[in-house]
Length: 94
Image (cartoon, rainbow, N blue to C red; front, side):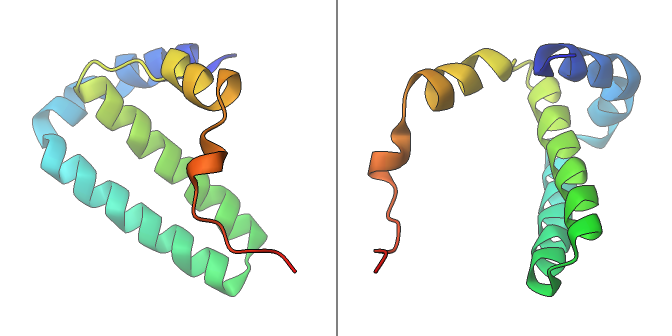
């Protein structure tokens, strides 16, 4: 199953709730999930990291659905076909 299909399934199942909740609520939940992911990473708890990554992805897809934005094509264009990593401020390796 590709990302586009997953996003559509999430929209069918949760859009009615997301529309009632609104974008600021969804954004607050996304921030909460990112905080939980940060804590799991800090503790290096692999199972928790996996779970929190899924929660973050779900919230990103829910926000995208609320704004009728399909993410798969842009994700592929921006990060697979192109390579923005040269613009990233990465630490120098010794």
